[in-house]
Image (cartoon, rainbow, N blue to C red; front, side, top):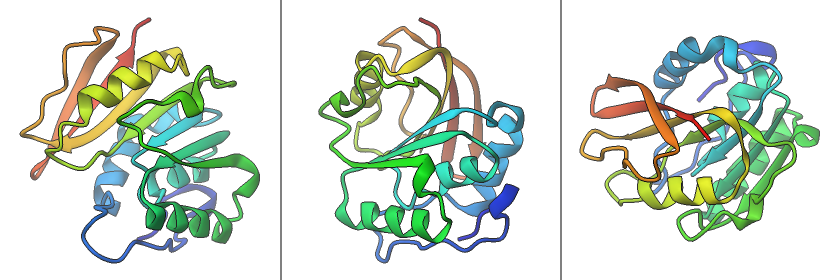
Length: 184
């Protein structure tokens, strides 16, 4: 895996062995960043189910201001920390080991609030609804925050809470990428 663009372009980052973590492919990450290109600079990023941290590291490479990585997996958190260190990003990040599906009290009323959220939960585990609810309840997002969700085509974006509006969806093989705006 490599960083695609920005100040870290071409930098290799560590992936996680085994099949428990499914990192976003370089090609899919590039497609997403081509869509949101002008919405990244100077933003605060939240990377949920962060895995290797590739998404938020890519955003930091493209001049995002700050990123928070959250994952429950010990091996994922370890990989994220190694990747952050190798990219020399320690002063622009926070890494949290946390069960996102239970709550997000670890980032409640985050200051600064997040402008961009990326979610890549395990497919077909019904994590979308509780995660979106917890995200809303945490009061950690700016109004108009862009939420990007990589998910299985078999899972639909829940209608509740109604504070999220789907603005776009793109199909990539068996993966669906949904773009939502936080409308509160």
